Image (cartoon, one colour):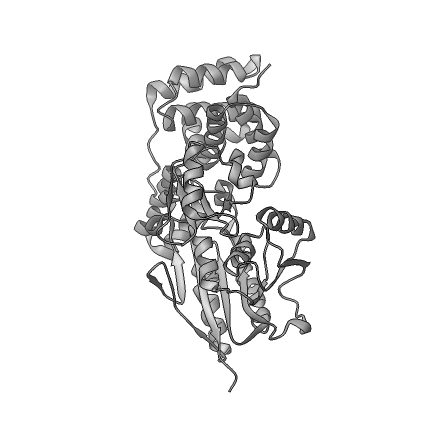
Length: 434
């Protein structure tokens, strides 16, 4: 018997509550395992990401309607009420009766009356009022923990913080990078349209394609290596690197490999790229991706970017340090990042700086060093680069130009203003030998 979309979504949500890890991986595994149509796949995706994204708001509603706090409810019961509320509040295309009935039918018999009562009470009473405290109100309204709201308000001010948080609640459609070793952009756009994907050329990056969504996993050209998923911000980072045919390139924190792939494509698959990652288990992702794309100039190595490799000193024409970060620029794609305790990220700037400083030694005189993150916090971005430049007089910041747009040497892309991932790119040049 076919499994319903809501049952699949519930199972994924319960797994995400129980286990650590990213919801996109659990979701991909479930969608690969279950044979369901495109509409149901889209509904499962919407429900999983949506419930995780809006959990604080949903639990605020539950707390106002139930004598039990949400955390005291049985996990399956809490999951079903969240699913039902999410559909009632946020999905206009789902009739309220369907949201209620499906949630009740999936509930254990002992809890069906309770689930039904909570959902129908919400339909009668509507959204409860927000807390009086402005930070708590922001937390409930946009569904981010108070600690993260406080951090963003300190970083940007209250108005801009709210704008950024709201933007990261808008789920982005997939963006692709064309593999020009195998295809051209217009050809891929036509190919995507034939498969029912509304696709158009990016104006920000030369090989980018924007879409309005669709069933990405089953696209023919994706598995054939004609294109791959990569946000415009990440593609821009590859363009800032400026790798060209015959270069030697080091990608220091490379997995899953999109920036290595972008560099190799820009190099016309001629030259040498060494892609490092701290985790040996992730190296196969780079190898498999390169093979699918027809790239054979990438060598993968296990390695910690903080550890000096004497044989690589002044070896590379270009080095990219896309360092481990808090991820506070990609919450739209990985909604559970919002629930990370900001205190757990406070040690990151020192780790990032150690990678940047160590790997700068690998850049040849006259070569290029790119430092990047997928966060919007200055302590991980500009502050680190300015600290580096203060103590490394042989490097200087260098702006760059892509598709006719001028970018500062230190550029931050913001989800609200740029409609991309939140992303930081710093392009530095090592002075030529005297």
